Length: 96
Image 1 (cartoon, rainbow, N blue to C red):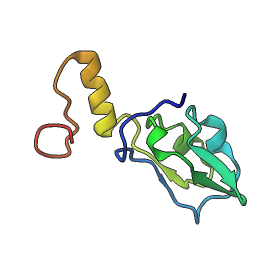
Image 2: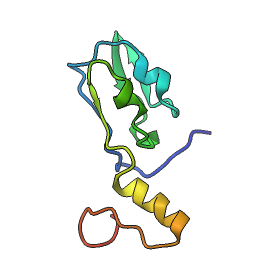
Image 3: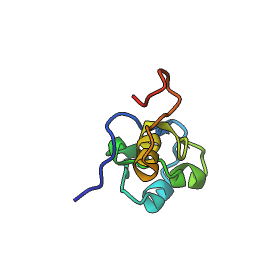
Image 4: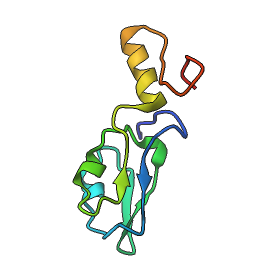
């Protein structure tokens, strides 16, 4: 069973033109979000991204960007742990 978060809320972005195909992102991603195909990284399951930031921190080409620990997914998870209404600063005072 693959871990799932919220659909279409992750901040993960890949600049395929910068990618050098080293495979580091696929090595460090705890949820298998990446695959190397034709000497380039591809995002195979963006919604499985937990925004930990390991891929971006380890990418020597700076082809990946992710705002670790931010966004609606982080706000909702934080709300579960704290028992408070989640807010992610995306407007309207509530999360998504």
